[in-house]
Amino acid sequence: MRYAAIDVGSNAVRLLIAEIIENNGSVSFKKNTLIRVPVRLGDDAFLAKNLSDRKTDDLVKSLVAFRNLMDVYRVSDYMACGTSAMREAQNGAEVVQRIKDQANIDLQIVHGEAEAKIIYASHAELNIDKTKNYLYIDVGGGSTELSLFSNGELVASQSFNLGTIRILDNQDRDETWNEMKDFIREHTRAYKNIFGIGTGGNINKLYRLSQEKDGVPMSYVKLRALYNYLNSFSLKDRINVLGLNQDRADVIIPACEIYLTVLKCANIKTIYVPTVGMVDGIIQTLIEKNNLTRS
Image (cartoon, helix red, strand yellow):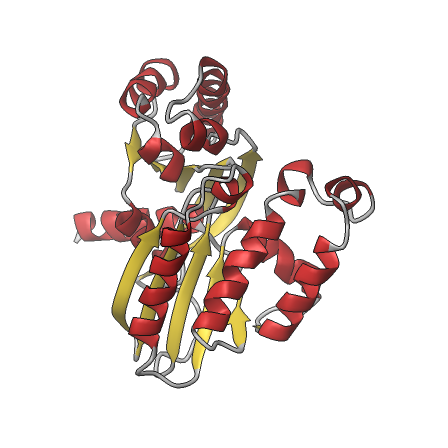
């Protein structure tokens, strides 16, 4: 049995097809196919507040291809989510209808809190000490989701209109930065020794660049050093010398700035990077939904 997850993000559109594994009553999944298309809807959504015909065409073509792959893989269930850029585009409902008509995919535009819930569902199988305190940090193209957990319980969660594409397009606002800092200070001051857990394509790439062993957290000091190192190169050299993809080489700098700001504000010394994201959370959400349905 296979499930599919589609994440229509502000920087890229992703498809994950996963094999569902049932073993002695427990259900897990193994990644089969992961495809990423850098459509970058945020450039339109955050500046013009609308998705242009060109961006919409690119998005629809990508989702038609995803639908064909899902059919070939005989996917039995799927979920497609649009996040920050789709939330902000005034013609979002029209685009959703066109996707339904041409790609036969039902795209849900999810609000920030629902997005955070899906992202953190991806950690269901993480081997972490639930007696400790964790701040989950997901940085996307259009928004940053923060959730504080203590003793395995959710203490506070909020989504902020602060993301890598917004910063590159000069659409981030001082008020939003301050709002995020106030949220962090208010909800973390009562806890000592908070650990970070970072998700998103940029922190995954930063973790690989750090050359840490799998499962070993990355220190704030190492992340700061990586940021200074990457920032010492021009955009062109980050692509040609460091070998970063063009659509990663620009956003990785503002992503670093967000992660470093959050970690410093929360006085977090280390961050775990489980290399999961929205699509993993969608698959986990489908597993939970279908298990509940069966029971």
